[in-house]
Image (cartoon, rainbow, N blue to C red; front, side, top):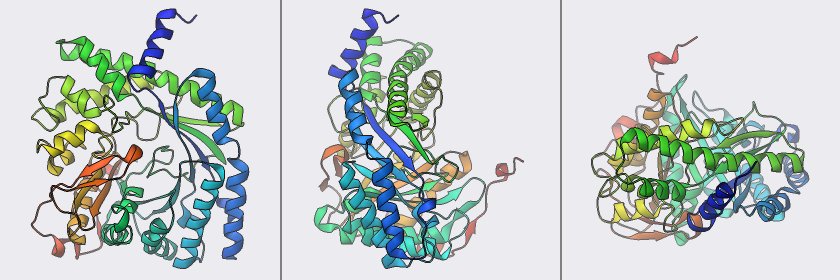
Length: 452
């Protein structure tokens, strides 16, 4: 039986602590859309998306009204497009991106992810064509998100793909310079990319997934921050226990929404991603959770330890609350999307090097970080390689979403609006790594990849 105190607690979380369902994402397979005719391929994609996801937005809105739970985003993820493109050339892939964008607008969803390539061990001709098309595709569409998986613990790091991604990021920044280089916010480079991630920009519908599936991403950093503040000066073990209990409550709400959406749509329930996803809103910050633990500012000594405690407790609490937990699941630290991170970077407490260290113990990686627009592509590649190596060596997902803000320098700010927020431009190490990146080839997988 539901107790009145639990109901009131949930109402308070939603009303005062920014608790919400960050996304209900429908994954849709495109394998049966394949055609030798590029025009027919696009027609098949458009028709299938509109047929399968026709009721996604109305159902999510009905659940929102029924339970009073805000559902912020309704999204679609599709089979990595490089896997269904066949002999499609660069222009053909751009037309596919435009088709995805048109379908997303017809359906009223916020984003569609899966304009993606999986190249951790090598690049097919189709993957190369898709990757070369990414800057144009992202500059000419509004709702399409793209990702490239360049590494895995089993395969190592494809440095040729890393080098290509540096050029993709620079060109995308140039083509969307009039919009704060926002195209780069829709592109992410992965190691060990999960096939069931509901969050953008890295969502895609993996080859091992069912025909269609519902994955839900929760939020809740404001709820955790408020709980930590109320706890006061308790011990670390008590703090971990408190965060676990709070994470359980947040994830149960995600499980409820996922099951209701699955039932109403007649689509299998996939996973709940229990990541703490911040926003620029006051009181909805992962950085503020860390500061509530006793840090003067995010980035201060102790930050990585505090984040490790938070991430572990969130996972331990969340995994008990859902039938299936997956995706990224942990704590996000995107700079532009987190009010506390923005403040920490602005006052110099948080650097890109400290952010990299923090990614060893949390979800994803160097996320939504604006850097000077004149940063060389080789330097961007070096940053990607460093971050990706953390994921490969530690058998975890890591990613990079850098924004070389065209025409901007250190100290400037790039405004994106909405959930993407604003990003202070921060410095990167000025020493070069061009000769290192130019070596090409593949960095071998670590020895612990041999687990069979």
